[in-house]
Length: 281
Length: 291
Image (cartoon, rainbow over the protein chains, first blue to last red):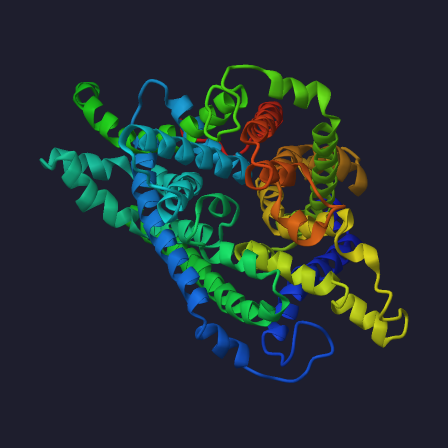
């Protein structure tokens, strides 16, 4: 090695820089966490330790309803996303068909659309559809959680495909062919051979979609209508300073659980890789 | 396989139908809708014009300079944020890829983890820090460096605040592509450069840096694309001085209720992003898709 990385001074400098950046990234989060246990409002000096904000948050019905809505949207949209993601990944990795590059471009393009533009596009679509329904049948569906769910599936889909395809690529196709040769239908082969091997990747894809949906504000803000999801509720309440400590408390709990979820997902992914490595040897 | 291929065409169609349909209905069609809306092909609100015309586009591109100047302001902000973020993340990616042997993935996770927490929460944290009665100003009051009636004004509700918070939000995400780019590098190239008489700086500038360029371009795109349509952070910490193009789009739909103009702005933004992706795509080898 004869790059800068070989110079002791440079490595030392980089180490210090790394430490400073980590501090920059974590200090604001620590500040929030501290304030969630602080008597009084969200300003210095600190007034003393309390857990009242956590109790208050737990007994706030509106807040709880917003959390429930987000939980429903997150679970339903992640389930749909994983099903669609498996189908698309399977098609991309195992099948050859006309227009495959175009299909790949289509499934990955939600990665680069600004969420603002996408949210607005869906708003226009749903409103136009409602107008059509009103004129033709005198009824309408309106915005709401179904609209948010639909939007979240679109933006989460590329992430699930990026999670599933690498494992599917490395899963030996001969296992599936063996299933086929032994007389299993493609459907049987999928459920009995591919699915059990793929299961850990599906779990981490599900968790990624779940956290993405639960935290998503931009799209939901246009589509939630009169049933705000948690981030939409949070945003609306941020303008009320007296609510701030309570919101910070809930957010701290969510922060810790989402970190936990991601760690679980990562462990699951690693374990699946190890299992496959054993299966191959 | 060839005979099986033929019979399995139906299976392929069965696999692709659902995802394809979902994306066509809820991704392509909506985008086509705002494009059509912007030229008056659809009317939803009573105030929408009833015939097809390019007036709204004409007004936006040539007439009303307010929108255009907002657009350029947004470009400036996004560009600044993207460059700062890439400059700060590069040493991190470099450090993890080339200087750390053990625990590099743990350290990488330490950098990425904040990205997995709530976006609104992270913006909120800065509101608490930068506000007029926030952490920094209160500290200044206590140290008698500033009187409580006169907090540092530019800390919040300014373009500075927007850029600081956006940079904070995106740094964890961007270290990753840079790390991946450097991690896959053939180290013998560095030795070769050394053997050929290049010193460390020269090796870095002439070998490492060019080789990591695709990762850097990918990183740049990862920040630039989402920040160019940003409207949440400016709303929370930007005030009127931090108002951006994205806020204008949102206001057209939620406050001004001029959906046609809003569609023009939104579709324009989408076009800009698409063109940028096409241009950058040539320079960068973002994770290849199995095709």
